[in-house]
Image 1 (cartoon, rainbow, N blue to C red):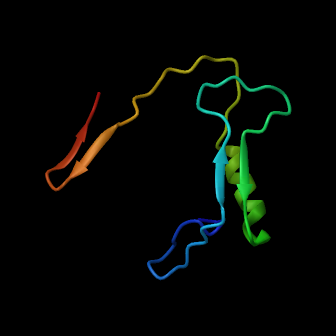
Image 2 (tube, rainbow, N blue to C red):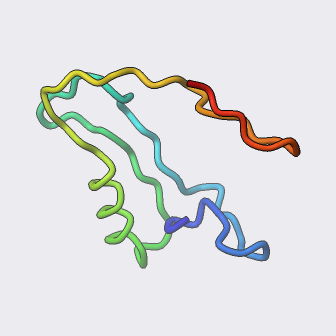
Length: 84
């Protein structure tokens, strides 16, 4: 939402020209100087905070990750059904 791609309030405008394209998937090998993401923005007002959040969302290491299921749970009128 910092870039303007989401809404903070129902009335907030959405900027369809901003966003983030992730270049790597979880568990992918990453080489030195390889791009992890592309950020598209129109207003640099929140760019520093966006960069900090994006950088803190990546963890790079040698440890092999356990593959997580694509769907963790479903939510309906009946409640939450979690998948183990």
